[in-house]
Image (cartoon, rainbow, N blue to C red; front, side, top):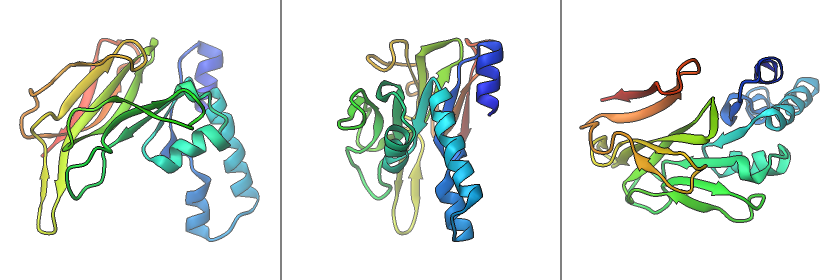
Length: 193
């Protein structure tokens, strides 16, 4: 509701980070469907239709955005950290342009570094930032940070990408990324140890 308010009254762009509204979470918590579940499903669909872009963090949310949410498939991106227990090619940023039938990996750094978060420049939907995090879990430890962890940017909706902080983060992990709405040249990234 808030996204539509800002978009239609003030002309602001709206990015929907899908895990924020999810009828399945309601059903899992309360073990039932009902009027509130139906309301959440309708709000979710309205939110997808209002959004300029949807960010999905996994295959399930990606399918919901295109199938149930009715999102224009050219407006759906996925940030994939990959599985945690070893190097793998399922890491990076993916985009669909055919309703989710196929997905193109538009940014891949290496098999140990995955896309952790995506955000859209509120003043220009062609500009997207992606945070990447080198991460691997073993039964006895977690190896995270360093390597190619950092922030990447596209100015053409994911066709080409350039590093913003490539190899400057050090041993930190890189998490959330946000663009200041009042100053789109200001980008915040969350780091941790």
